[in-house]
Length: 103
Image 1 (cartoon, helix red, strand yellow):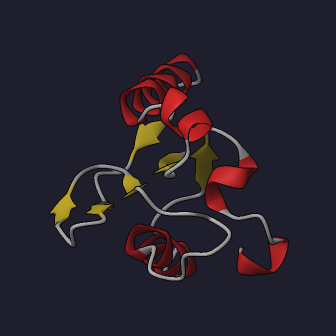
Image 2 (cartoon, helix red, strand yellow; image 1 turned 180 degrees about the horizontal axis):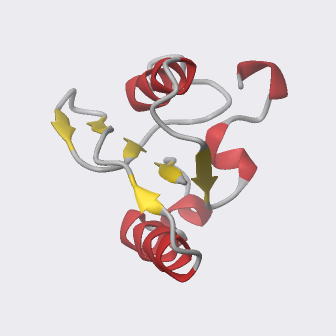
């Protein structure tokens, strides 16, 4: 099945301990172990406004609770509606959103 990952690192110290590289490694290991295809779509969105094509959806330096500017998250939802992937992985549900209604 086609799989993508959503990665978010917020601004507080606890969030920084689960770094982007750690989350990427866990995502790739899981997909490989379970024989899933990582879809080569996604964006890497940083606070300084840079948007870089990656293979994952990454929001760097954004709060899941307060920040409505998470462009990678918004793009991921749009791509899900289009059927580009069947499985979404996230380090924790709270990396996506604190409110289920956002999903």
